[in-house]
Image (tube, rainbow, N blue to C red; front, side, top):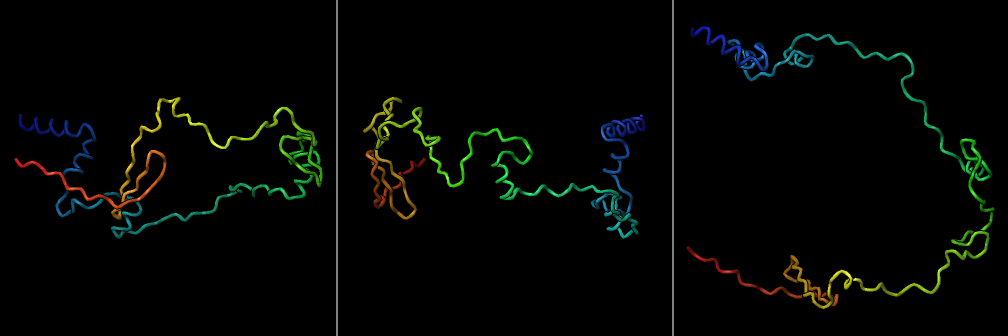
Length: 178
């Protein structure tokens, strides 16, 4: 009965990985190092000192590399493009081209003022304060203290002014004893 239980136990334990893997991971032959790395690939054969025969890499037949990239367009190609065709030979569908020596200005094609996008008046000097729209109230803020590493404190006041003063030495709070 004991022998059958031992065989059954070995079969159950080896069910996940296979009996050979189970035995090789748990038992070694006498004289072998159980901590030695296992394997029989080319590098392991070299480590153990066995002779190795390796097949050299040979060049593949045919051209496997892509051709050179297309050259960048020259200024002459760009000038030809302005004359009516783009590099692919498709007619240029853009509007009027700026003539040599011509001037370009925003919003005034052909030298005529653009009435659809003209700016009236001047730009405001400051942006209006939108804090009230979001429920924030001016003047209710307190001074923000930012300690510096050199023993000073930077103060940012509610009106936006900034000043730096020496840090006040505060006493450490007493800890209650039990």
